[in-house]
Length: 419
Image 1 (cartoon, rainbow, N blue to C red):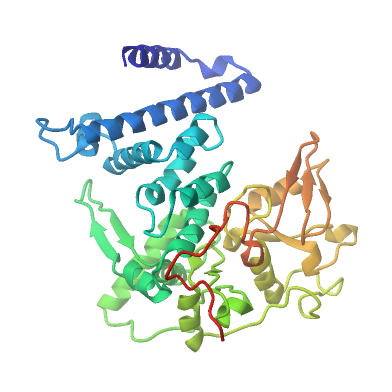
Image 2: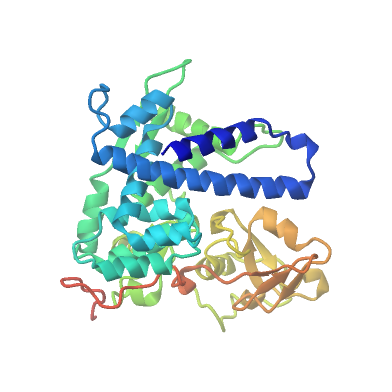
């Protein structure tokens, strides 16, 4: 312990003496990676210390309710962050596979943190081998990818029906408000994801679009929408629903028919259970999206810009920005021609894909080359020779190496239904 404290003091002193303006870009990048490596090691060490201190009840006699409360109060930091460190430490102690993966660099501490809850509170049907499989399947994953794998894994191992899961999630709904400070207050809203999308879409439409010269951030615009809705309701002017805003949710035909329970997804990447989508479909507008061989989707050279039908197909196939590991939601992406229109490219689903505004700009830089079409094995080679894999990430391609199912179905869980 004394050695750790000495090394931390030395690292702090070195960081305090760092002068970033006196270095080159390459050295700054190297220093950033070095800092991140050190922070990761410190985070793991602190997480283990938190778990150990909690086990020994080291907060007793301090006047605090637990170690997280003591750490947050003493350092004037986030209580939630302290609790996450404690949970990570417990997970590292419970799972040797997780501990080894973090120690070897195969899992970042942030990704391990995304797995901590399911490891410390696994479904009753989960076995140690199932947990080992989950850790192995998420090696090299980002935190969002790990969370998606956890959701899929939990679905496969729980005996809870989709109806029971929806009821449990709905029971978590809450609105909490902080004590006002400087004339403002923060409200936190917890809702099932589809209800949250409905709320945000209502704010979005009530706020209106950005006007020319509008200096608001998008967060400020949504806040203005919330204020507008509240004022209209309080004045008695909200007296009915609207045909818009609409929420697009994609799901496979098999899941919609009840043959599987594969979830659907919104353009923002939200995961919606098949049960919820089937219930919504009773009063929703349904539109079939054919992924190939459809004359509406494949417009060739007749139309330059993607149609609404094509956009729906791209959401289903791509899911988000196609560039490497970019997770920008489909709703925020541009439709781009793989082969540029000016060079003879066609407005066909096989030759269109979704790119976020940043990566849309990057793909048009000099020296950038795209290989393959938009369906599979799509790659981008940058001007410096770096090649980036750009696979589809949507509903029809959702089963990645980070969504590995368990070897056998747990007892009591019906994973498919017979029509």
